[in-house]
Image (cartoon, rainbow, N blue to C red; front, side, top):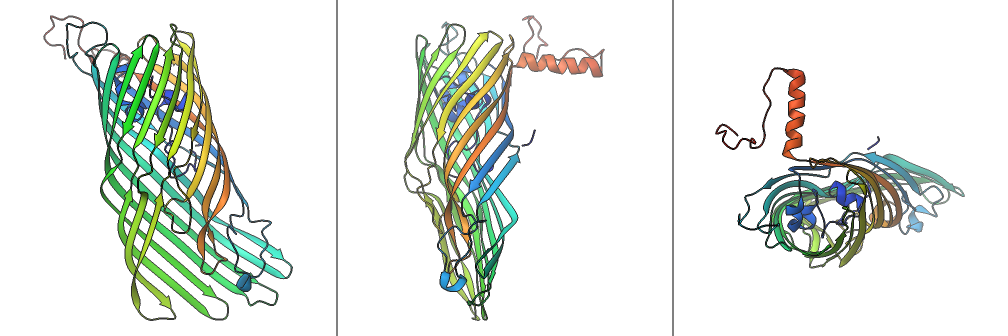
Length: 486
């Protein structure tokens, strides 16, 4: 059991799997979601969650990435460095990591109208924590060597990048009628990012003088924001239609910092250092979602989901003020650095199914897309990659009569696009995009449990530790006349 995908791209709305069932059904859940993904995909589905406790742990992911010309990603200043060998400039990386996904507690409320039958009037609260976006990349302590004619090059390189979007989502949903359900979720959002690009290179030989270059670019920040999502489902027979609209983030506060360092030597030495701080905003745009699901008599379900995100304004923005010191030079000069990334309109779709062979066992499968919302990459981009992904999933479900569920499965994916890499052979050095491909598999374990199942587990443990202890009751006793019932 190795451990999460590292190259999921910043700016990908599905870079972290949500829920166990949703993750194994192609990322669907807008119409028929019944797990911890409901508050994030369609809050109206919270009333359909039968269990009190819902969790999903993406406990292992393996990712293989191939990046072309990683060490020489852009044009070379041949007048200074000469013609450089690029035969060993590609990289291949296998990564493993462990990450959590969602954890939810659901609480049933008294029916709004006790005189009604069916589902009308059923209401429920949900409290969910979830990592909805995640990107990690670590290529540290690496480098390459090469020779072309009488010119040789040696480079030491380290790149580390991290992006995370963590959401706490209190959610409420109610069945207005037997067919119509509405729900809403207020999302408290914490965004955190950091990146470090560090490279040192030496070229020597031939008629050109030996040169040495050091280049370091780093930034980090976090922001707090609020967002909301409204959802509705409408059932007609065995068909269910779901729709959602998610508001853009309203950033409450955010702060970040950045630094760059460049040193160049080929007989004479020059250097430049910048340190700055300022406001950081990570803002997701308005998003719309629609889903269509069908439920067969035996419990088998099929669902097709689509989503569309707008592109209103800069999504990632770090505006810093600081000082720059250039050598030769003696004074610290005031300067500013503005890093930002625009998002583009983004469409994604998913198709999934859960097939029941009998009431206790099911197979889950699905396919979906996760296209990047990043508009483009350049040296001033705050996003560090632009990767489009397609993924497929396959899993197994075990269901108990008391409402408990255990899901085990895998989600495999293929991604293609570009990522920023330090180009130390430009004058001055810059971050430049280079093409990248990635393959990966995410192992998912998910589950649900109701109060009765939790009570049975607690009492089973108590019977081992203290056999004479009375049983614990987490819910009302069957004897309605017992006034001591908790």
